[in-house]
Image (cartoon, rainbow, N blue to C red; front, side):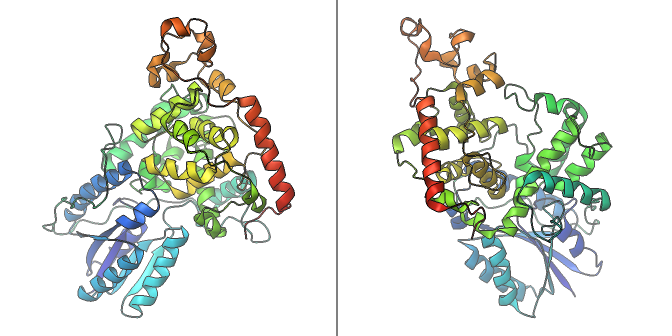
Length: 480
């Protein structure tokens, strides 16, 4: 009997799963699935305990769903990728696997692991990989010189043309077979876990329901409310996209059903949300074109010479939400308590760490990964390099967010700040974004720290540090 094995990674779904669909095309084949947790690899890359728990919850659901269709899900823990390769090679030999199916991962270490596996199993098992977690495949959106774009807008325009020419269809779930005895009980990971909370129900059905609800009820006004953190105006789908419970094709097709004109550039909710999805996959395409990004290297070489400050007290104050800048502190409290942060606030808090405190962006990048339920290397690295002015299509180094005016602009009435910083509830609106200036603060016993840095002086210092680095490193704009 022919045996097909599906190696699940960050694609924990039955519907629109290219590897699973291909493995099930031969009705005579026995189909198995496997998920291999790599706890040391997770530690090395700062996976958050919430994301680890989220993965396990979805594995339990997926095990039941697969078992109902006659596909047994095997589960194994290995310390790292090297041990993962050895265990998988032995499993293929023991189960006499003829073909191994998997969906590509695009980070440098993951791609090298897959190459090692193919060499390890040789001709005994045929490996077949698929571009499944991106829109369109890396390398298919390029300049006339066959090069990856370094700037987002021309990439987006080429991306949209590609979508118009090649409409990405969703694949069905595998056909039902005789149910097997597998259950959804997945042994606890040898890794810290924290419940993700009621905002993140497990299972494909819950994820697809969230997608439908967003497209039917919130998409139309997305462009108006997406930058206001006090509003529930964003899709909040990133956690399911990161571990592959939802596919980018499912999001795109649901978007087109809700708004057939979504591909038309303009100030519509549908196009604005599509634009955000394209940003997400722009960063993933970049990982493939410039592998140094997976190694936390800046895209712009001269920014390696920025003289970062090594100040643990300031960094700890930023992590704890005790900087004295309410919009930054509210954002950091939201992250610590929920494992998620509004995108506008990610930009503001990242800019504050890098430009106001002049602390290395990689420290912030790692801290975010350790907290985020939707932690994704490409998106997180891309966002931090944008804020730090070290990446492709980044904010110019002289563009520095003023945390006070950002708070006044995007949380004008203080609804978000007061939600996460209850100590500031009695502060009048006209002092809320600078509570240390409130004359009645001493009498009211205000329990809130003064600013840990003067923004005006910090801005000058940041500009001087970047200009010195540029003078030292030259004007090369591409990683080696």
